[in-house]
Length: 339
Image (tube, rainbow, N blue to C red; front, side):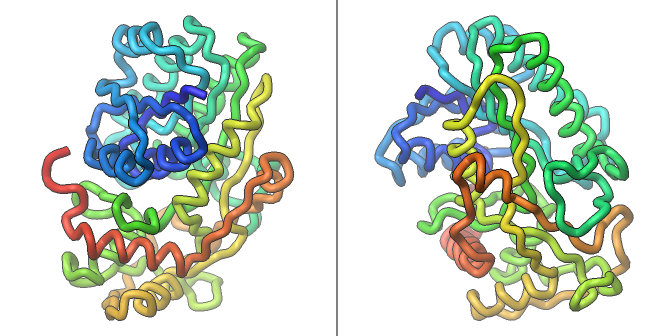
């Protein structure tokens, strides 16, 4: 299958490209490199011994995107492109709505004009807002309590896709709501390379361990959890990548939605302790006040993905820490200064 991977030079995209190529798919990546690095694709090619067609450009550019569709015989699309920093979305709401919605609208128009009927969409557990229970299934209500424009943009995109599928009955969509991606490829050759100060826990811990940052800020130690810190479901990025490829094989007309997570929660302090164990480094931290909108416990119920997609996780949180540390040690400055 010839697959267009939007945002494929990014963290999740590069790991998904590895699995696609290893499974025998033909991969084209469309990315504007605004928050990613072409070196990631070079390394994917080295890891797999296979080539990627790199299509540079902005997914919101309708003329460019249509030209790429006209020039290529795509069978399916995995849509990962978009802005993803929750805190930044609060500071720059119009930018997030403009980018995350316009890219999806442009993509769907091009898909319909070119009759490309298979889509896997990268959504997020943020669409559940303020969960009514710690363990979240796909039946959990969405929308109530969403605290940031990033989460709203994901939910709006889901609605745009559902409306498009109603108007275009042949469209086959798998909508993936995943929880907290962590880790790196086991080779240490590709991994998470955040711009500036990391927004996520694992790369921040990694940068403290390698000496790039002085200490970790732990926001809140008064939650109703086993050690008072927030508990999250951390999924290894390679398990997540395999979930995208499993979803691609199961697309049928209409829209299906699946959670991708481990079903196991890890607290912030447990994450620190595990990373200290695998790295042999001490992670200094300072407890600070809770951040507005942070929740005590968020864990995925991913049974549906197991039953319908034949997918399940096979890597532990310790594996994720070990792989993230290997990536960090081998690449202290990520992929380098040029993006």
